[in-house]
Amino acid sequence: MALKPFMKILQTAERVSPTDLSDNYVFQRSILAYYEAAKQVHGEVLELGTGEGYGIELLAPKSTRYVCADKHQPGVDLSIYPNVTFKQTSFPPLDFADNSFDFVITFQVIEHIPNDSLYVKEIFRVLKPGGKLIVTTPNKKMSITRNPWHVREYTLLELETLLLKSFQSVEKKGVSGNAKIMEYYNKNKASVRKITRFDVFNLQYVLPRQLLQIPYDLLNRMNRKKLLQNNTGLVSDIKMEDYTVQAADDQCFDWFYIATKK
View 1 (spheres, rainbow, N blue to C red):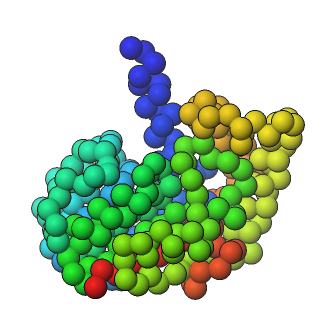
View 2 (cartoon, rainbow, N blue to C red):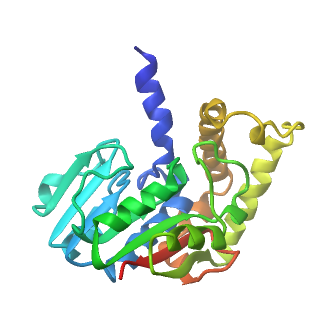
């Protein structure tokens, strides 16, 4: 029984913290996606994979109804938002009626979904005609090492191909960083390489990902803490404005795609 809370802590380490400074590099990139989405969303909005919930304050005021769904409760007080409801659930499928939402938001989630085709089909189903899906996910080509929490990651073409199986049009954008961001990225890459050099048999790509999740989670957290300790000024100085959303290319850290149901 004592193992379950421990496992929950490890699993939620994938959820970026807005208060842990060692997460700042990832958090600022994550919050940018919500600011970009806030420029578009309106009406009835569904967020799949709410995480800590730090995007709710940006998107809920833009919505007439905001439904957030996740396996775990968000870390924010939802009672202050009269138009927000939370549904604790796993997906797919989605427990919502056809043509229910004007927008579906799903940030850094689809890479965790085993049946991604069904996931996209279900999102298409619950969107109203003219509705939009806004999705972010890591660019596989910019990943430094295997993340065993991810079922898969996508190239530019792979994500477009998946979305076009259901949607009629896809706008391809991505999140890129300036010189400050690239400095951190390169330091992070060098630090990770020091760890993975011991993996002479490339076991990270051979062993079942479930077997690697706990070691990865612990090493990932230790690595971020060490980078913060050795580069405090750089890490703390990273701001959302150091990232930009632009036309997608292979140098983007995350994809930011907008798919439309016509």
